Length: 480
Image (cartoon, rainbow, N blue to C red):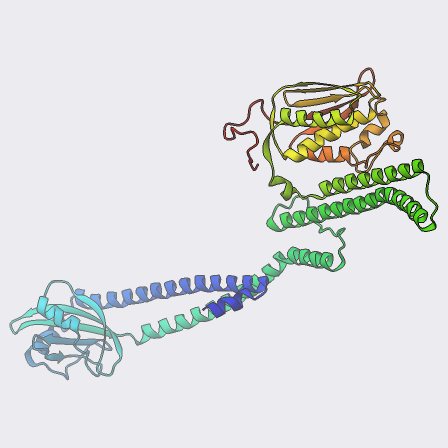
């Protein structure tokens, strides 16, 4: 059985569908055919039984005379009733025959039971004559001066069985034709129904072979069946993959461009230091310190750039595993301590109210630090940065030159840097990381020009002023 199932599962889907349809039709046709055969058999037997009953119920003096004569002499050569069998069976199972047909009806257990129990009703049953021919029998109880006996009336079933056999053959032929036709129809329907699946398979194989993600499967707009939904899902998947590949290629190109500048500067500075050592011509101390400081700065910039690239390459699943209930107030306080170290000459004010969100603590703090670093970077010496957190809205306002209106749509793009800020340190990934982190936490971030000059960054995050009841410890890990 398992071998058959394995072979069945190894067949193509259309073949399996055709076989299943043929099997279902075969089962249905078989059930209908068997039911039809038994109904016809019942009707034919009912007619035979009716004919036997009429032989008894209709007054027939000749039949009564035959019964009397049979009981008197048990004659076997008296006149009979045509092709019907007529005999009387006594209590000692003596058979008194008065029939025109040759042979006798064999005494059955039913006849013996009627002799023993008597009664008023006759019993219909099947039997055989001495030659083994099938007959339909009516056994009627009799009470005579010679003791209990039964009257056995029977008629041959040769014609009835012939009719039933012909009907069975016809039903068998019709069933066979029906099953074959159902199998062919099932195969045709399977081919037509699976044609979109074939197209989908060809598209998938084409993508696997050529890595061409521009392939699309045509789908009717009003189609809502499973194949249409599958085709739309495939088109959506290839679109997402194509977009992801494009972003990946763009990220690689931008990263290569950004890495080229610090690497070139590092190479130049290191070659100068190496040449000085090889030629024995010492570089002036001031110049040497400047070169070493430049190398250190370029190394720091490379490390920051690599860290930003790693942050952007982290998958959604990796981030989701570290989501916790986080106190936004504590996160901003921690970011402010780092910002004050980077801008000691600036005045940073803070007005923070409690707010709890679900986010990755490290990523959220880094996003806030990036926003504050951006404000520190563009604030004038002795300037002020105002930080406010209320009802889940964090605003960071600086008093720097501000961002031109035509540059605002690009501030969150990867590696994008304002022309006026390209001389400043940075990779152009800070605000891109901010946007991604805030969006993954279910919030939104925006930058705008502030009234009176400067820039205001606004971060909105869903949450509550108190931690959720199931997490009394704000730092406890809670998966979303």
